[in-house]
Length: 170
Image 1 (tube, rainbow, N blue to C red):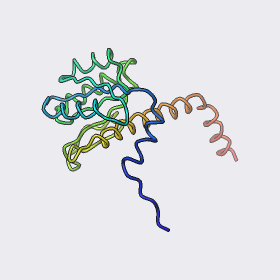
Image 2 (image 1 turned 180 degrees about the horizontal axis):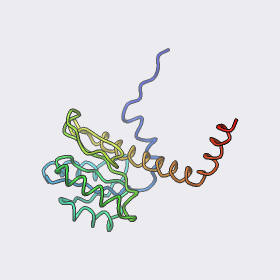
Image 3 (image 1 turned 120 degrees about the vertical axis):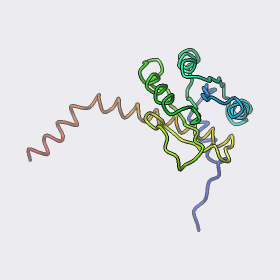
Image 4 (image 1 turned 45 degrees about the vertical axis):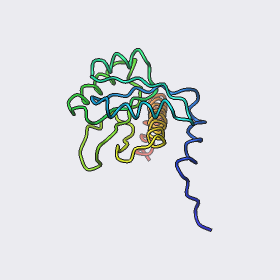
């Protein structure tokens, strides 16, 4: 008997159970024509409740992230690379926004983009509501895992160092 292939619809309910309540998402881009279908799709998503806000510049994005307190930020790669870098530095530099996961919407898999601090990527080509929702869920879970590992490591750092020091002495 062969392996069972899961479809997008089979995977989303699991993510729905893991992430409880409505999910606040901040969409950031410089083109309202490209962002509005994503905004509408997330607000009309039937499997999970999304609350979305849109920002069109870096300064406004940081202020909205502080005020709106999103669970995830979806960033369009049409924003200039230097602006993405500035945004990520400001986002990670502020303790109120440092833990917010970021998903980057890319035009192409072939082009290089800024990736420091980005938890997930999704291609705009053939973008569906299920794909963007799954990308948001993945970014949130990845961010939670990173924080857990970071906190666990620093709580138990001395035990890890002692373990390796004992192995060297042997």
